[in-house]
Image (cartoon, rainbow, N blue to C red):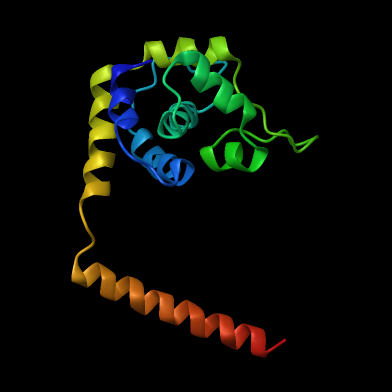
Length: 151
């Protein structure tokens, strides 16, 4: 398991999947060591799935790949895995594929992305952000009430 993921192993996570989806936005900046041809899975999806499994308690490559294989389809879609257009099923990488790609990652870039994610989680929302969120929440509630009363 990449040492950068060890940082996540020491972090309490009440919602590992939601945290991993938020982390995937930072993972878009990771350099992809793979060639352009033959990319079936996006790099952020692979790393976000590994991060979600570590946040959920996986501590080895075997546990990570088992968690990803056992994850429901909706969770895999949320992490960014592709959906087969004909069958509608979500394909997940083979354990060897995941291991090969995680080992090839730039450790420093992954460490920076995870560090930035953990720092953003630790920073509490200021009063301005809470005020905007509250206003947006109230607007959505009133819009939902208006929509339900129009039915």
